[in-house]
Amino acid sequence: TETVNRCAGCGVLLQTEEKGKLGYIPAEAMDKEPLICQRCYRIKHYNESSSITLQQDDFLKLLGHVGQTKALVVKIVDIFDFEGSMISGLARFVGSNPVLLVVNKIDLLPKVTNANKIINWVQRRAKEENLKVVDIILCSAKKNIGFDRVITAVQEYRGNMDVYVVGATNVGKSTLINRLISDYSDLDSELTTSQYPGTTLDLVKIPLDDGKFIVDTPGIVHRHRLTEVVKKRDLARIMPDKPLKPMVFQLNEAQTLFFGALARFDFIKGEHQSFTCYTSNAVQIHRTKLERADALYEEHKGVMLAPPNLADLEELPKFVKHPLHIPKGKQMDVLISGLGWIRVNSIAGAELAVHAPKGIKVIAREALI
Ligand code: GDP
Image (cartoon, rainbow, N blue to C red; front, side):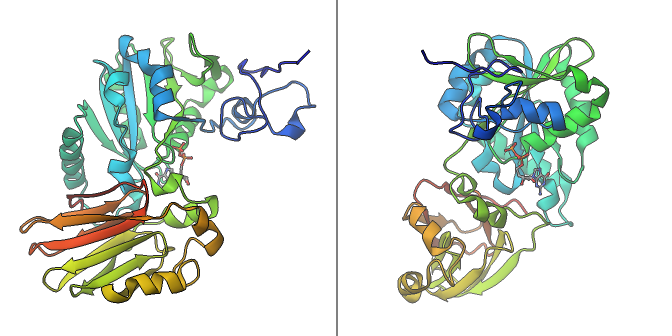
């Protein structure tokens, strides 16, 4: 007969195949006692909540009925990829519950950026995405900016309800949850994972002093973000870890910029104008003539045009072309989800095309900065 192993901590079925998925345990830990999944192990020994992940459909299937309970939903988004990290199907999950929007990684914005302008921008963008929010907090979980305001806002809006923390993967949800855990450090010993009723999903719960909980939900994988598609070694390169140092390019029409071999930006038609690239410094930008772009790519992809390297490029979906029209009189950004954005500086309008791996979200939006 087959023996079924369950985690002594949370009761989840153990598996050694898929790291980052529920119940993962490294094979070499299978002969140690007690048998405990990697997630519980980390919580127990490091007070560290590591993120488990789910596809959006599974997330809504497993957690969809939170909408029928009374709760505060804390939604974390990443200012470096605002539209990419919004969760489109969230309305069903939220129901009539209040949503507190926490905008993380604010440390990445250039120092001069005016916080009120950012909040107003976020408010307009959230509205366009049909997300009603009770408040918007800017923060940096990593640099410890605005964290006290997150706590105050959670306390203010939750009343006597449970709090569900949701977010796409790589928005910094674990970093924020870990901050919450260490700020409630006297409660460490009571930190639990418990199975969500009627599911196989175990959730990390941080107890609050009125018997309610802050519940960490699985990170939602968005395949339209470049961060979820590149290899791990390239992830660290495309995600900036210091304030952005934007690069300005003065371009004539019929010029092209390559962002490694990750994306290509064509300025097809318009007046001579400047374009400001808000991308990680570790992604090299190459300028060329539009008519030379195809040949340059074929010749230099994966070597001069890197990341990714040639082998990893094989596994990246092929480029798809996104034509974009920037109307006259508008200040706009072109967002390539997970890679950053390019600000179109002139208000004279422009015809553009972005080539990005198939499936990656590319949009034009109101300029952030
Ligand atoms: P999760 O997948 O949402 O749980 O995200 P993590 O907490 O694992 O963070 C994903 C990546 O974003 C890690 O490389 C973090 O170091 C980074 N990160 C998290 N919070 C911040 C932040 O406030 N600022 C910056 N610059 N990076 C952050």
